[in-house]
Image (cartoon, rainbow, N blue to C red):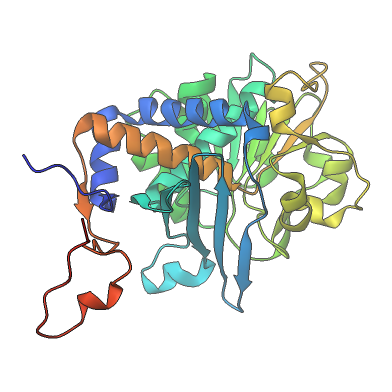
Length: 353
C-alpha cells in the first residue's frame, strides 16, 4: 500500500461528523468533547492565546478564532447571521483546521457547524460542573433554536438534569425541541413566559440569537443559589442579561480580554472582578462558595474549545475509519519549483542527488 503523502490533509465532511456522532452516541460525543476541553483548560499556560478577529456587518458577523501550543495550531472560521433562517440557511456555519506548528502543514480540516453545537454545549457542562450546585436537577432553557437540544442533552447526560423548563418567543421552536427530545428521559415543560420558566430552576441557560442588547434575565428573576449559563451574548452589541444580574453574581469567563468586549460583561466597567474558568478547574481559584451564591458563566466561545473539539473529532474519526484525504497543498518534486505545476510541456525537474 502506498504510504499517505506528507502534505495530504485528513478531511471530515458534515456527513462524516454526523456519522461519527451517530456511531459514538450523543452522550459519549458530548462527554468526549467535554473531557478534551477540560484537559486543555488544565494546561492553559501552554497556549498562545488571542481574542478572535471579527468583521461585523449590518446582518451579522464573520470571525476567525486562532490558537496554538508548541506543536499544533488551530483556527475556526465561523459566522453569526440571525436572519439566515428566513432564507433557509443556518445562523451559524463553521469549519476549522489543525496544522503542524513545525512545518505549517494543515493536517486536519473539518466541518464545525455541528461540532460547534457540541463543543458549546460541552463547554456549558464543564463550567456548570464546576460552578452549579451539585444536586441541580432542574434547568430553564431560554431560546429553543439550533443550539438548544445540545444544551439540554449535555446538562442531562453530564450533570444529571432531569427537568427542563422551555421558553422561546417562537413557539414552533419549542415544539421542535420537544419533538426532537421526546425519546429521552427528560421532563420537558413548555412555559408561557421567561418568569415561569426560570421560577424554581437550579440552572438557567440563555441561548438566544438576535443581535441586540436584550434583557432576557433581569435581577427580579434571579433566585439564591442559581447558576446562570449565559450563552447567547457573544459579540459587541449582543447581550442577554441586565447588568445588575452580573453585579449580583460571581462571574466566570473563558478568556477575559475577549469576554470584556463580546460578553454580557461589555456593559460593566473594566475593573469589575471576574475569574477565568481555567483557574477554577485547576484549583487556583474558588468556584461556588455556598449553596446560596449566584454563579454566572458569561460564555462567548473561545478558540481553545474549538482546538479541543477538533482534536476530539480527529482522534475519533481515525479510530472509526471516517473521512478522506485531500490534496490541499501541492506536492512538489522540487519544493522551490512551484511554477512546475503550471509550466506547459516540460516535466518538473527532480531534486539533485
